[in-house]
Image 1 (tube, rainbow, N blue to C red):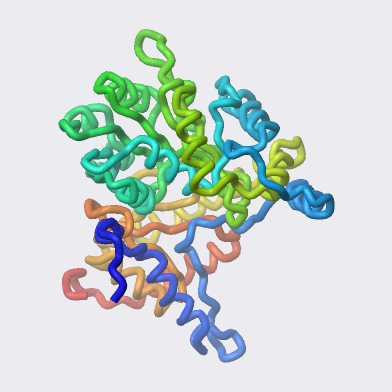
Image 2 (image 1 turned 180 degrees about the vertical axis):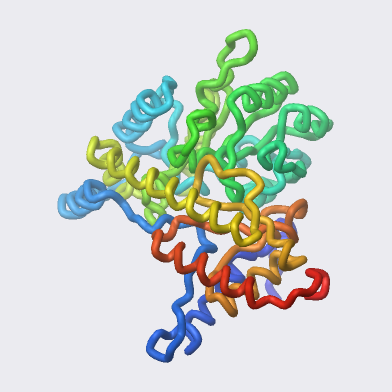
Length: 412
């Protein structure tokens, strides 16, 4: 018997992947085989866009391979790439970020790992919203710290506020880990509220980490801002003390390339660099060289076209869900998720998702992955698929809901 580390006791299964396995098995069965009269499975359970890297990025990767330009880079990444990210912040979000504060990482996951290992240790508590992306709290646990979940409400856009952070701050609290826009809700924290949270954390000697991997996919100008240009009530710069996590996966369509970045306060650059040197040497050099082309004019125009497409898909899906009795309490202002209430039909989101996987052949994600507060009530739907697939999925959901018996949800 091989003994495993005790930290695994705090790492829960990723239920979306377990349900995805079941959906894949059904997808390979005759029920989903068009040749046998079946209907193909539609996967709306995984947060992956239906587009890939822009043409210029793919071409840049090919040139990199042809030229043999695949050796190690500096642990903090290609400086040219860090400069282009800095320029993107300036043009897109009107914020000045010194390229030396940017660390290129092996995806946003690599960025979160570096940040948590650099800042947290056993005995620390980190405040996080419920619901939130499960892997984020597991990064905290992997560093030996404890994720303390703050239950949220639709009235606060399923996001914590400064009052909740202050009320739940304890003697062992080290900081907060937020996401704006959020997975699974697609909702963001208003600029003024985020500044208030950052001020509460700073005043208590803590650290603020914000997952901004969906920031490029914002649909509402009231929320499409970066935490890096926040100011306090006296006009002081809060952004210099905040850690921002970002990625090339979502807005830039490079999911499998595993490339992200971390913006850290100046005093954390050297410690994070030291960790990166020892944990993975550097992020993929091929992905880094290719990502330089993300910031060319044609590429940025393509990303904006895709963002508008996703907004149209959001509008379609949310309207359809509301019409069939699956309300989305807060319109997602970013990302590509709809967080809807299934309890008109099922008491358990897990049962709802299993039923729709088996009968509608639409794979969805039950709320239990994202925290206990809304585990039974809510379901996450990813609208990152094509509009054609989304239309078909909505038709199938409507069909199966119409077939359900008129009995109380508690009896199912």
